[in-house]
Length: 354
Image (tube, rainbow, N blue to C red; front, side, top):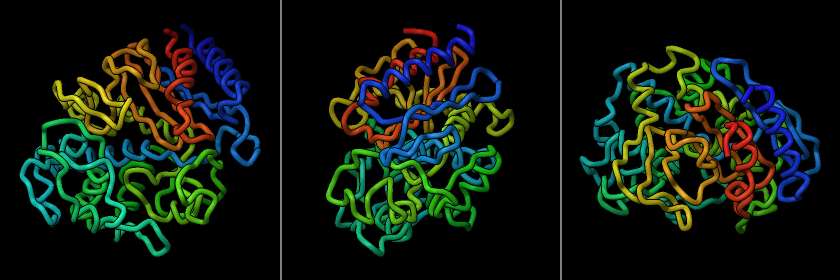
């Protein structure tokens, strides 16, 4: 399918989704091959403000693509090795040789999905430094290499390795190794110069408080290396395109190829039900689509397609078979299922496949 017709079909799918009332608005970015991306906006954010293509969004776990890219660039510079134990660089409470950089990147190191709430209480005064110490104290949930268990803790540890090897705060590492070289407008741990789009349907006890996840300056200040990036649709798209070899030379070709190849053999796992699969392919940062069902990316994108989703209601994905990459940033969290059940029409239109 021609790029222009794909873009038109994607816009129609986005307009249909917004008209359904399942979400108030989305911003979509699409790039075919090495072409310059196209970005369009439909609808409003949670405050009723009309969305525009350059709007900033909290992109939640799409942040992990950026963190993975920073780590991979350190590997290319031979400052770390994929199969190094993390304990070579950081002092954890429970050392284990099976907790390697590779396993942290592909979520097979054995850590739980998230930190125990008591380890770093989500309350005023919380900082990245406190969260970092909690990551160092985290114990294994199961033996390394035994299943895929998606983990924020693992990405906290990867950020700490990057800090140890560069002597800089991770937010600065990310800016210098990833955001600036890729030309991305992105903010981690600093307040953006303009207000991000407001996200609807944030749940939990901090909803509508100064600590509300995704929407508050407090949440943004935490500089979460697994979830805290604020960027545009074009920025999210640039992250996944870096794994496609754009721009050339950003990653070495052998490492880039390995990064988008499943590292998890036939291990089962994933998130929480129903998002657990057997097998559960995952690369060095990006999730690999495989034949997972249910999934937010339609099967037509191809089993070798890859990318990441974010709980704030967003995704960044690439389909090598179609030569296309895209990002969808929504103004509603994924909690009610719109991303899983209804965003696929946009992705299918972009891929030119069912």
